Image (cartoon, rainbow, N blue to C red):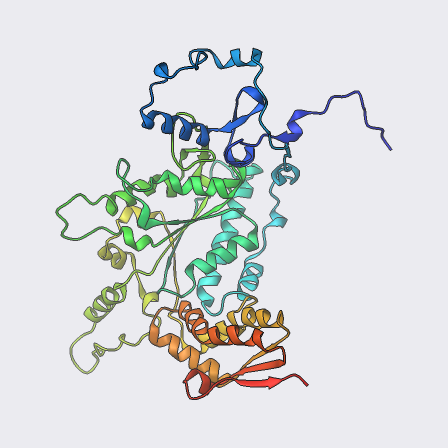
Length: 458
């Protein structure tokens, strides 16, 4: 065994500084400002201190007993100032990116493995899972080819961003969250409704990349392999017949073009706002996978109008109500339908892969209740297991819950709302009686024709 060199001084770079005010570490808040007395302040806290002083309107020249206000901060080192209580230094966490070798083609799971992993969490939406699995696999193969110099000058692999279209509660956001967790890559979820044109109140376009950098622990190299999911993308559609300036519609689509295509973006490190004190980092969005999702309400009507125009007159004509009850009506969507909805053609051209999700049916909702690894029923069963009580749901009860969720027309989100409503009394009353062994949820209880079946311990 090698003996440690006791004469070698302890390296300071093994520890990271902690802000004296907010207690954030240097890896979270960015580079620190060294103050007299051994204190360290992050740029955010320093800026807030300056703002509070300036906004208070104090004139320090009129304050007595403050002879050192015009002195340099370095002069305070000679004064006998009692040192404040400084938090202990915290060891810097070793970055996994430094330990891991370069991206290997064997590390990228094949499309069928990605889909098999998604099947454990997401019910249905087979075509959507297949398309996303292939798109993600090709995207990371593109990164591998570039990092290892296997991309020739003649053949340049272009980035394939994804546009997800589906009704509310069909699993768009959940699908992306599950995908990022399985691939172990940083994920940033941004809401398009908060984005506005530069110069107006709201989030700038660069804030989307800033969230990804924060999710990657301010590691630029790791962030450039991440995924950005922009939700509610249909809310930035071009407004029709608007006399005022559309600062959250078409202009936001135009500013998103540079991010989707790939460009160098300067974003603040450890802060969401650009200021003179915040350090900046340059992120290349060329290797970031962008997934945009939205419900696109009334898009079905646009598709039906286009399909019905193709119907002819006579015995061979198609019925005008043929597509009224079609659950896969969104699968017939084209770029012309999306342009009519309000999306500009340049924006759609940078989202070449279009994925449509089906509206959930009653059998799919029943499976969502009980089949996924983190199904809602399994969560309630686990909660009551901690009280040593067994929870059982009858099949008729599950069918009633699924049917009621369909009536609410909010997708899978309605399932938890219904269960929360009916499980409230059970979760409140069961811990009162230690003799309860089993609780059976029946359809009669859900229809308010009785209570749940209680079985006592033997």
